[in-house]
Length: 292
Image 1 (cartoon, rainbow, N blue to C red):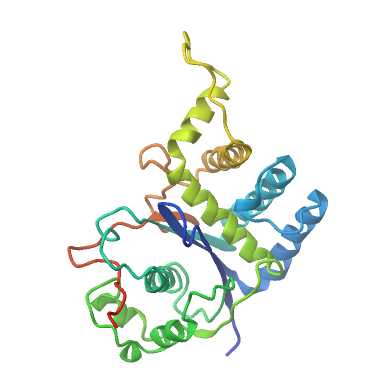
Image 2: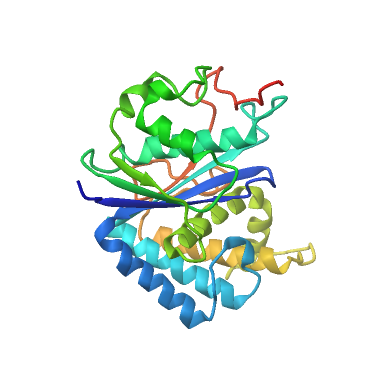
């Protein structure tokens, strides 16, 4: 059976910062080459070799990032692709535990993302090829086995993989999981931008709000505090986020920002979905490292 759908993913702040995320673009296979070529064209026009959130430090990288995000917004509006960003807080009750295994937690978050996108957001008849960005920390064999057959997943402790997972994973139609270099995979670069923007929106929420006030067309009356200074990264990242929020409002994408202290999509069926993960029950804890 031929592959009907593709998914490209990348992580943000894997080992640093309070907030971590996985961004994933999923789309009809027939549109992948055209969308990838559009992203490649914009990168070439901007003279940017690779679009990465952490590399946005000046106007050239910012313009390239904005153009790529705009391409994805337009494709999502036409239901040719989805953007799903799973964000978690390492300071919440799920993660503030001794001996936390961040490597295995990242693997479980990938599984959670696949579980909620491949069959809940696309047709159950879809067949998939998954292209995560190269990440030596991930045990992709374990992920393949889990997605292919839950009986081969030996970690039975209560965690993200609840009873619901067994029924959902009977058949995912996954043909292959193949790591790719984001430098060569333009759709993975787009996933990186969305993931990075998601973590930035929470980690730097107060910074962004200050930047927004100072750059508002309607400055507050009787402003007494001196203007805040921002680093080049804070400035450029805030501009990218601002442009995206404007686009989201313009096209009624159903995104919320101020109410959640960062980007969030209350209705996950919307084509651009920022999902802030919160513990599902009292036993939902991050995995811990095995004692030797």
